[in-house]
Image (cartoon, rainbow, N blue to C red; front, side, top):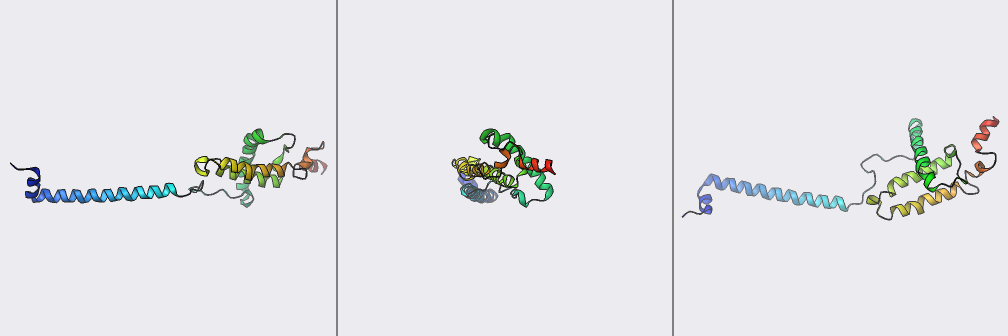
Length: 167
């Protein structure tokens, strides 16, 4: 009676094929281990939000055309999200985009929001850090008694509009 092992050992061509397949399996196993290690390293590495995309520059560092597009996006974000959720109509300038300080501060708040609101990237504390470190200080400054909106809330209305009407 001949066993399978005896047949493999006696057939030279078949034993070479088996040896070749065993080598290929070992190489594939090594590739799997290498790829698993790389995947583990990538998962453990700190990720920057939008790292694959080009980072959005600060609004005051943009070209004129890029500034206009970014300002339009910022106006939508502020008017559709920020003001309805966090705004105080009694302290908010209705034409806030005409205040350069407001544009700069709110753009910075929006950039931080994009980074910190995604808890899968920033962790569960991200939204809290956004409120504490970015939103609250910006709103406090914009709506302060000496802030950029202070003169707009008088009976005369928005400062820029008053200047344009008197000219």
